[in-house]
Length: 267
Image (cartoon, rainbow, N blue to C red):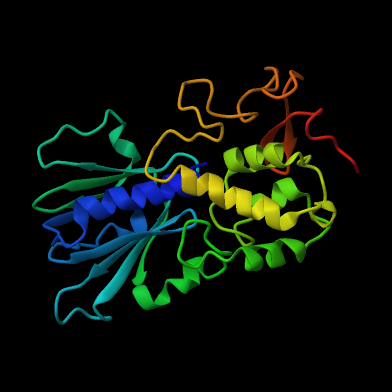
């Protein structure tokens, strides 16, 4: 699943391609929006909220239902937005994966395998993202509030709690595994037993922020292939700290990677 920094980067791609442009055409390939035509609408801005993308638009004068609207989308595991120059060849992806196409005089934006597509009044955005915790890469980032939300469920494992977007918005499986390794915390530790919950939250935000603006995610400081993570994706390989084989197991509904020596289960 794309992490918060990937969604943040995607929002900036759409911002550069479409912000301020009047759409010359739109093509929705999902049943609920199949008859929607946004030609003549203006793209005001592209923003992210945790793992949610919000493309804010202005409808032409006289549009029924008001002028400010938002196209919401979620990338989940396999969604993506791509921006192309007019006439440029699109990425070699099956056409049946395309969910929406926006055309403007200067760019074409194509959404592949998007989820939760919805066109709603901008004033109603909170109905889709209001449940989210503080956004690690947003202007509302509040580490104290994130800690408060995490601590409200002390019996939940920290591995599952960090992925719960109601606690803090933007952490995915990669950062969950890497943050817990760097803090020396077993993913199965109960939230109430984490010795420095604030330090864990702050580190998560620092790691995501460090990877804004680039597509190669690194928690080690290296961008070389095979050297970008400490434990994530490294099952049976030696821990970069102690040499113990990195382990992999299911926690909740997600695969978890950890070093049993550096992250002992003290429960």
